[in-house]
Structures are given as structure tokens and as C-alpha cells.
Length: 382
Image 1 (cartoon, rainbow, N blue to C red):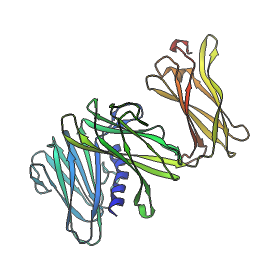
Image 2: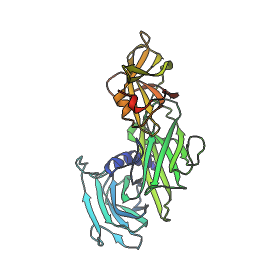
Image 3: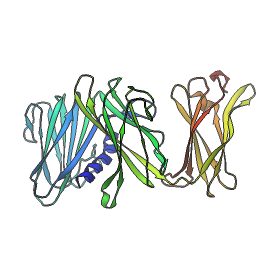
Image 4: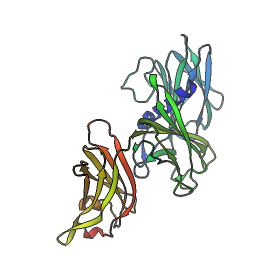
């Protein structure tokens, strides 16, 4: 049960990420300063304690939420105990009781027992959250969400959250200490799937590394990478926890989550026409290329990613209907190519195929590519 509730808390980390103030990093990555923990106050237990690691921050918001009537207190590193009736200078405490209020700003608020504790310029160190039973029997699950206004931030990246079932993909955690890479962190990902009753089960665990080996592109750049696989159709949550010490020597902890939507790979993809620039008078009006698809009859959306040397990317879209036609013909207009901002050649990284249906997307193929366009100067584009 403890593992299930901790796993479920990691699912809620995604909501915490949306609530925190984002700081853009690389393309497709937003850096956040969030940590999530959870557990269960068992039947017969009067109190449980959880340690919260706080690193130097301009402010800290703690959301303390429980699934049944409970009370909370907070021990500061200097030994001071914070309660709703004892608030040191710079600390505020707001309590909420109800069945959930969607207008409240942070995840966990509005649970049957929840509180928002805000601390200005919190002292770094170990804080202790105490959860006590306030009546009732049975297990009481609880959730602790920490949102830091600090400089040590983490963001998660995958090429696409839509993946074919059973296909290994690269997952990366970008970890920065101010503008510098956060080095020597212990970064681990747990793969979770929801079971009946809404509980979550851990179905895999992987360490992410920043050592320049295997999935990691460059050693010491603050990008911790590894290979993960969604082995079943539907949603698999990839939850990441990073622990370490900052360059200043302070202990920290950060968490985050990405949902991988896996589906059965039923379509084969083959390149039919190499990338080429199409001229319109003296200038080029589009990048054109073509793939053939083989699979069950139906309509598919096909997406190809074109990336420039500066890291910017654009996508080209096409439709196909195998076996009647089965050709996906791409035309990426020159105006879109010019938005990349630098001269080519450009890389065509991957082509992805989705069912053309309403509702959640189902990916039927993803083929990584090592294609390059012919060289081109921006001034040659229409």
C-alpha cells in the first residue's frame, strides 16, 4: 500500500509542475523547482513523520494534504515547531477542509484535510512534517508537495509522449543549478501504471546518467539520460526523482513526471523520395520528401520533424491511407523553414504515424531517421 500511494503521489507531481512558475530551458523543456512525497498513516498509528529537504530559496510553499481528517505540524531545522496557532515571523498557514475545490491554486488543496504553508526565505536543511490522526479509523493517505522559488530546477524531455508499445525511447532530465549544470546527482525514474481503484503500480525502474555513455550524449552537461520502454498499451507514467548537493554544498531533492501514451505499432514506414528543395522561379518555395506506409486500411496522420543546427525544429504534416495509396508526401513551406533562423543542411530526425481519429492519439509507428536535407542558405528561400 505504501508503494502504491507514493507512486500515486508522483502522478500528482505533474499537477504540481503546472502550478509552479516555469523557466524555459532548451526547446521542449520547462525547468521547475518541485518535490513530491507521500505515505500512509496506518490504522492504529497516531502519528507519522516525513523529512522534507529544503535548499536555499526565496520562498517555499508546502501543500499538506490528507485523504481523511488529519492535523499537521512542521518542525524547522532550528527546532521550532510550526502549527496554525504558532507561526514564527515570515510563516503563514492556511487550512482547507472539504471535498475538493477546483478553484484552489495548487494540487492537494481542497482535500478532506489540507493546508498551505508559505515560508519566506526558508533556512536550508531538513524539515519534518508530522501528520496526526484527528479521529476516525483505517488508513489515512497523505501527500506533501514542496514548491521552491529557488535556482535549482529540473525539467523532463522525451522526443514525443506518444510511443509504440515495447519500443525503447530516450528519457532525459535537465538539471541546472542557476545557469550551470547540476553535477553528480542521483537521478532515477520509476515507470507506473494505474490499477483498478486508481492505485498505481511500479512496473519498471531506470537510473538516468550524465556520463556521456549509451543514451547520454554528453558528459557533465546537466542532462541525465536513459532508455525507458512502455510495455503495455495506454498511459504509463514516468516519474523522476533527483537528489544531490548544489555547487554551494546544500542538499536538494526535485521530482517530475511525464505521461507516455503507448499503442500497438501496426504500420511500417519506408523512405521513397529523398529530401529535396523545390524551386519556384529563382527561389525555393518548399522542402519536399516522401514516405510509403504499409499497414491496415485506414486514414493516418504522418508527422516528420526537421531540426536545425541551432536546436530549433519545425514539423511537416501529411496524410496517407494504406493500402489504397500509402504515400505520405511532405511539403514544408519555405516560410516555415526560414523560422529555423540558420542556414541548412537540416536534419530530418523522425517520422511518426498516428490514427486519424477523434479523441486520444494512437501512434502506430515511429521511425528515427538520420536524413539530411541538401545545403541551403536562408536567402535562397522564398
